[in-house]
Length: 345
Image (cartoon, rainbow, N blue to C red; front, side):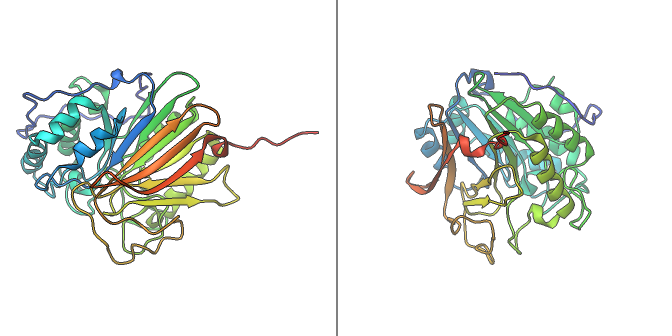
């Protein structure tokens, strides 16, 4: 596994809080246990008080990596001690403890585990919340990630020629009020993302975001509420000319597959949402998305990526239900997720 370069970070002073996450008896599968990567599971919206059977289903799929995509617990608080209590409740759940001991994980947050519903840059406990998030993830106390502002992070797995890079965005810490010129990521995170994407040597570049990027739903939070940030992201992806850029997201309490096939892009841009590990439901306007491949699947679910590195290399994405059946599925060929070089005479 390649080491992350900590770049473009705003640094935080050391924080001391009475809020504690208890680590006693917790066994975690380390990230450096990953050699070759072929199977990645992902999901979001996990309430610590609801049944946690889904972890056993995910274990049956034998993922090499788990990606948290936000609302990992429902803290819904601007009190750090209350938020810590919710994390501790999740960490006590037997099925989750078993899962942690067998599957390495990375992740990001969304509003309910950052603070309160739809919260943003003004969250009064965002610095304390950041430390609690890293405690929950098992991030070492000496990690440079604990000294930056925001929880964005990057990881590269696999051998040269068969690499997957995972870039986890923080769409809460710097999030301004929605508007035409409003920013979602903050300048330090934008600089970091540009460096990470431009320097990527991976064949698959996954970008994780707590809220959907390819969405035109009128009733859900989404990047579309931040037109300037959306344009900036498109521009960065196009300028990078990197292959295999795929978005993963959570938040909407449904699973969804999306595609932007615009001719102005280097190649079609896909996004896959998994939301509803413990609770899922239909919401108003949930089908109103110009980028959807099919209607959302609004029952308990997790996502599974299976990579076939043999020629023709491909990525299969499945949405799995509570019975571990495949509810939706699509396959992408890596050759179709590359910049097509012009043929010169």
